[in-house]
Length: 482
Image 1 (tube, rainbow, N blue to C red):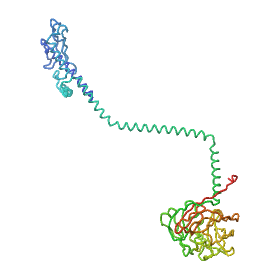
Image 2 (cartoon, rainbow, N blue to C red):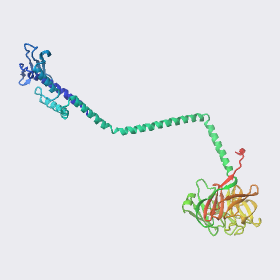
Image 3 (cartoon, helix red, strand yellow):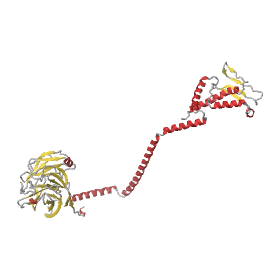
Image 4 (tube, one colour):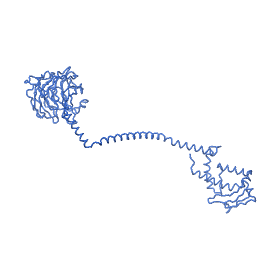
């Protein structure tokens, strides 16, 4: 703890009082009692003048005594020469008196001014407290002890700031790292800006737009190709009976991911609508649509918001709008066999199979005119009118299932056990070939297999399981067409 300046001022004032007291008291203490001070005005010390001895060199002399403007007594004392009084007993008394004064053990009222004396006495008592705590020590030693205690107290106040300083040090290091990273990144960006600056912005934008157009054109051409492989199956859901169909709309607008589900192959007219593939996989929440007639087989397809199906026990094709739940169009498929006349190998009234690819709506069936072999017809999706027909040489009853990709009809050799795609008919060239593309028949009974050009995947119903297969297509692209 530091000594306040107020206390220092008190000490100085007290020492002045002691000095004034000495001017009044020293003469009598050292034997100068031959001079008397007279009081003026009946008790108030005013002024006295001492009487000089006959031999000034041998005795103490009181030259004068007076009172200043603040009420303090001023006494002028002339001491004998040092050589004359070094052995004088009064000199010893004076030295002892000065030692007592230096230890601040004397408080004297000067000139009877009691209020001043009382305040100075209290201040002197507060100054005497340290000396009373450390008896026997010199003033310098006591001052050093008090100074050390003050320093320790200050350190106690500063010690809680150490964790704050440590945290600031860590933050400063992190800021320095950020600064270095920003400087490095700025350098890299400056280099990139110099490189990009070599090209005009409009020119770059034009080149990007041109590239996007070329990529879109390329993707359109990549949509069609020759089937070269089928992936392992992915089981989406297990539900329904042994036979059925499920699908999505390849012409659905962006964000429309509804799934359509039809259980069974006859005597059913309810179509389930699921909001999305995720909803179809994880829940059983659906909206039910009631068709005006039951369907036949598993060859239904949803295309551009309508469901196309074969009316049960007939060769009539119906287009039903799922939004308004009304029939938009019906048409007979001339000469097509029905009612299990020319079904797939697994049966199930699968005489007429409707399907879609990149080019539109198709119907696969058989006729007496073509000796029960497969007939392929391309249909107008609005009017259901037959646009073009191709007769193949592949027996419909020998086919396990069939689907169309890019105008090519692919036929499987069976529906159970080991299965493969082994026949392909190209409608654009009216030619066919035998191929060997195996795919896994995971649940041993396929009753529906259709291609979705939007997903570029095969949708299958395999013994009560809804399955997906990815397909691999071989593309031949001429560079001058890009």
